[in-house]
Image 1 (cartoon, rainbow over the protein chains, first blue to last red):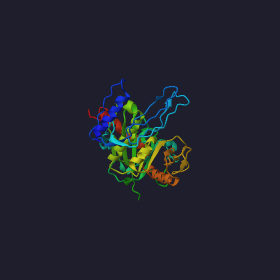
Image 2 (image 1 turned 60 degrees about the vertical axis):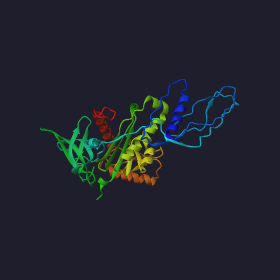
Image 3 (image 1 turned 90 degrees about the vertical axis):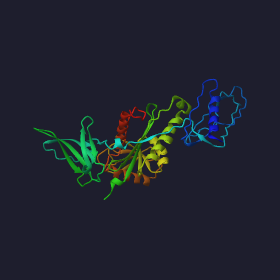
Image 4 (image 1 turned 45 degrees about the horizontal axis):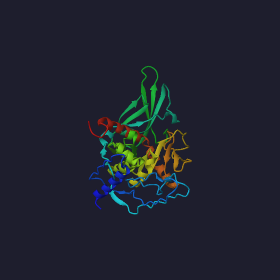
Length: 204
Length: 190
């Protein structure tokens, strides 16, 4: 069967579903759309007459490969005790056609942006057990792991208390370090960084 | 000497905030240095599509369309894939045909030693002490035997010695923010 014919069938289905209520517009099926498997909504249904009218609650039509109708049983309400519904027999053949309203997801390469973004290290001072000797300094923060030999530039984000690191993307260095941020006391003051190997015997 | 630069981790996010679906993939080496970054153009389903397909639409967009497109576009092959949204684990595993895990922060006290893996009550969930100076990470490894989980934890511990394991997720957010600023929110440049 031609794809156009199948699309027409689906269109007919919706026309019946919304008959008199809404105007159903057909959705375009782009030529580049990939083939998908469609479970049709066709069902063979037999309903025994009961005291009150049987109401079909819903039959759903799903148009993707991974989503199958979870229930193969027709649910009925307002039936008397002797009224019976019978199990719906799933339509045996799987139709292959085009997903209604199939979308294409364009994927962009964002390496231009990602290359210039820094990595960020949070302050891990609360987990440090071995702090540097303070002397006339106050221990403020500890950031790890940092590949010291690969650093192009660092910046302290004072608002968030994080360390921003720009690496040389071509560097092959791979030895991890930790760095303590110390504040110098006394005249002049200022900050001081103290680096130590994170993987060495004296690592933090 | 181990070569951390040749091992690759893949980070994947898919968001569907306010009816706008977008996904991104960042592949980094074990130092966190980016090797590939892909993102999808934002997809906003029409009201008609949302009514017609209901929740199935979201599943289709997230799993079939965005994840598959991202995985196909990635030019490097990560040894391991990491997501923060655990609902992506099963579909991602199907798409990439490789090991995947869910990883998130925890507020638990540090475990005894680096590499410690502590099973939690929820099946497939562990606390992993990835390094000596942080809280343990919450690791989600569905359908893995304990020895396989141990293998995964060794890999993550190795990576955590030279990078911060959760940091690439925030870098993805920042990059998508830049993309958003550079475009009109639809993927088109100003």
